[in-house]
Length: 251
Image 1 (cartoon, one colour):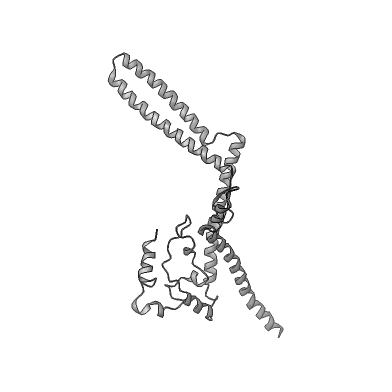
Image 2 (tube, rainbow, N blue to C red):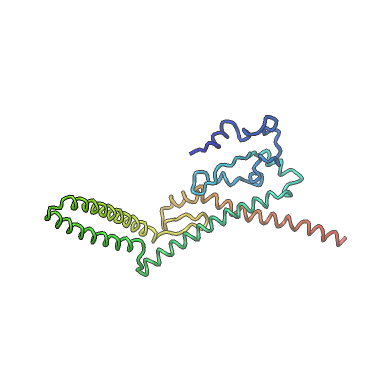
């Protein structure tokens, strides 16, 4: 669903909050209202719209002409925008890498429980279900005795408790069924090393392609590639002054 900010952008433009004398035609690339990430290549907020990794809308200006002006400027790559961009992208990668590690740990735990026969959530639920069943049986026997003694009100009060226990037991049975169904799927799952999504091993090629072309996967793939490119650019940029200094000394 489109956000209020995005809707206002479409209706009034991203520069809607600027004063009349600051409208986009007069805004320089270094103005605080301009998205510096966009100047460096792209704004990450645009990559994951309506996905679980949605970063929310960017309130700053994204303008191709301003990016070209920045790239032609004598201050290009000299004001720290690229380093800030790199740090932000690395923080996004660190977050998805944590998600990937958690995914691997979850699958490993599930597989270990299955191979060792350890009591997982399903086993614990079965134990609780048995305890509830035993309680219900005891209460029903007591209700029968109370009824035969003519203690109707006491029997009715105890019957309400029985109904509550039955509802609790039914909920546990339903949960157990869901867990078992998911566990059966988990046996055949793997973690995507790019975006952290769970994938079914041997899934239909069409679904694999859908995943690879999805916003989340493509977004993180783009971030990873950009991080490597930025590192190389900044490394070369750092080496240039050193090289020039060495040449001066030789002369």
